[in-house]
Length: 279
Length: 289
Image (cartoon, rainbow over all chains, first blue to last red; front, side, top):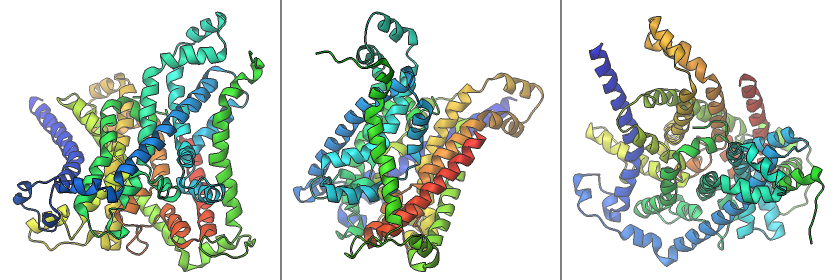
């Protein structure tokens, strides 16, 4: 029996280690390459590669001619606007669907869930044609509207979950005290779901930050996002095989999401499953 | 001035902005795609728009140029293999991580990384490792055993495999987290009685854990299947759909059609077929849930 337990311990640690190394190794590999000289990268890997590290790839990426700084600003603006708009209208809807008797509630709820089944590409083709005609192509608000496609259903569902956790007596007694619906929403519901709001906001930001498809099609020179800017370091985009700078921009792109990941583990599962699973 | 709304309509007013957005992001694209799919719209050719009826759908089936049947096959292989392996690995690691051990919190935090990291980074990251002409990790490992380098991303079946590996790396964590959440809801009593009855590890898994997780498994597989049918970034960054069309899943195929070749009407028809496929899959799954 004792022997069996020790084997079991060993198996658990072995797999836990395997999983951790499997996740971290690619990222560390990328970090190493981002610190190598362009010349070194085309040599065979060897121990020497650890001795001559340089930040030159990062300087290269941030060179004004690459436009990455502008891309970062564009992404920040678009993703922040998306987050704010989605959070405001999404939590209002979540409040309504969870606390007010609305006719057709089931149907609307199903509609919002089924939004998840709407392929981004099926949205992007009509949006592109419409944006070209309506002057929304390559504008911040055009991108925000496109990103609302996935962020609004996400906010409605995660916020719905958080609002449901607030005891009904709280807002019912506030109603009795004479507060209107808007008052209850602003003064009771929102303050009581602050942690949920923060988690939802961070996730919404990350989802927008991570999008490539919509930005690729709907942005141009003015509003190019950092995901599109990073994809320009692919060999197919005509600059040649710049693996060092590509690794550098890949890591830069990870920074905000890694920070949020560390803050968000618990609320993530709920978010990614549209509230179907709570962890 | 005080505006007083009729009580009955208050709920709708709160919902209104979201309903407008949904109208713009679901109904409008569907209707527009439907319209495009029965015309002969081309992004790069200016000619009179004509009504072609079922023409585009017929062309998808008849004309090899559009690679539609191949794209369906690639999609089935890509989604089928990656989601099944993610399910199997997800169950395995969830059961392991559900045990008490030192560093468990750390591992559970780490597994969030692959799915939150920008897919562009993930694609670049793995492309770097599969690459031949640079620091290709896998070729380096082969060289340690005296083997010749393999051009992973320029051979059709290997390229598809590479894209599947990346998808598994990226999304197995979601399965793990969902099942971990599920395992925490499973009561301990059935386990205790199974152990008393002398059930082995496999029997406990098969007759206690698996049935308890059934609902979670259906949800997890459904979500992954939907998202995997929409995979874009990994393929764009790693292979660009190639070599040839070997990694062009339906979703990617229509992106190339619409924005590389300008066959917007063809792409819109494919988009509607994809929506239909997803609705059918979702219906089938929700029956089991």
